[in-house]
Length: 89
Image 1 (tube, rainbow, N blue to C red):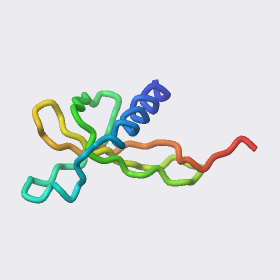
Image 2: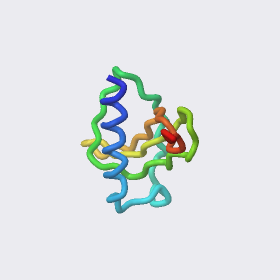
Image 3: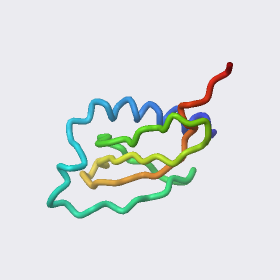
Image 4: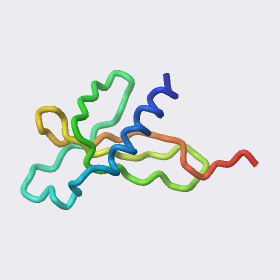
């Protein structure tokens, strides 16, 4: 189940590269509350706005995804991923 979550969130990361809006364009909007991800979290992601970079370390690290839901509401989701600095050699 964790692998599925990481794969799903990783695929959303790829979608973030296509986002045409930056966090600085939020001026005038109410700041979204940072939500912690859990397995029971219902995700309604219509558009990924921004993804934080995954650090180049070999440990589990917190990252965030900023997205708009299908109603146009802005959300920030905090979750954990394995850092990108691990190697098999």
